[in-house]
Length: 215
Ligand code: AMP
Image (cartoon, rainbow, N blue to C red; front, side, top):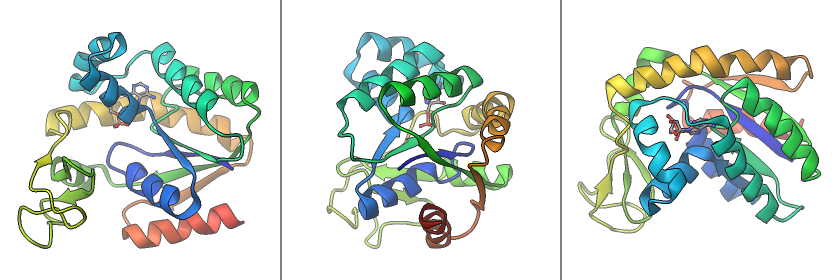
């Protein structure tokens, strides 16, 4: 089963994708994660993408679609894909249709996480992760049980994304409203869109997603 998780930055797409990977052995295809890895490795794509990402703007459609193409080519046919943060523009949505056809896959669901933008700014600017294992934390909502020590792996190193500051977050949200939200009607016309309250507790959101996948 292949699904798209759609929603503005901080809506919980990454968190929910992680849970689906854990529970169902699906594969998370996050173009944001792929681009961050490219930036870290200083590949030509990473070098090009870095300043665009730091500003909160969108990297070119060709670059992200090529990343998705490569990941789909490397994946086993029997494993479901969760598209997280892709597609983000109409051109990417059309490219994804082609890529799915090329790799013999069909899109089962587009799940939109509906959220309140002002609350999102608080959610995003407070988030940080364990530098070792990637476990997610938050200044207000989820501090490590022992201050300064990761619950999962015990590391004392944490990191924040450079684009998780208020100004960049506002730009990322504008980009979402202007370029990403308009692709929903394309999927609505196919009858595969479900809308979920993304401000609910993480567990409630997961339960609702599970129900959609089972339906
Ligand atoms: P994310 O982790 O999904 O919030 O993405 C972080 C940043 O990576 C975005 O603000 C964009 O600059 C870039 N990015 C990630 N995915 C895409 C995409 N599908 N299209 C264009 N830019 C992207």
